[in-house]
Image 1 (spheres, one colour):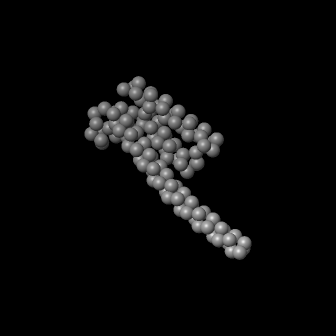
Image 2: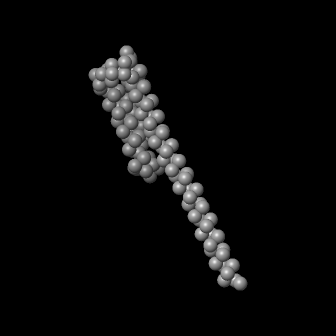
Image 3: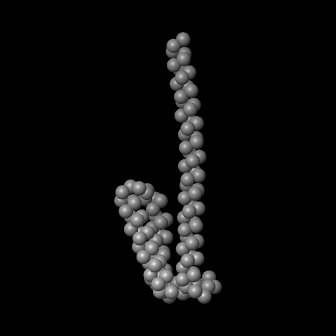
Length: 118
């Protein structure tokens, strides 16, 4: 059990460092990094505070604390992935609308040029 908790701790610290480095280099926007930072801190907290993890495992009805940790981590990351899927969907819709507006503007410019040449 302790080995798995140590792996979870190292993973959460690496995730924290990776996200902070990405924010610093402007590879990820700050508003998108908050979810990842919160998930990494939650994973770090749960992997280091064993009585909290035991209490959560008891609430979940799971006999193994590491299994509870994996269940919680999986659920948190699924929520984050869902959130980013929604964001990407909105960006795609916005991109289509923007492309349509550009096409309309190009049409109007071409119409103006055609009338100017007549």
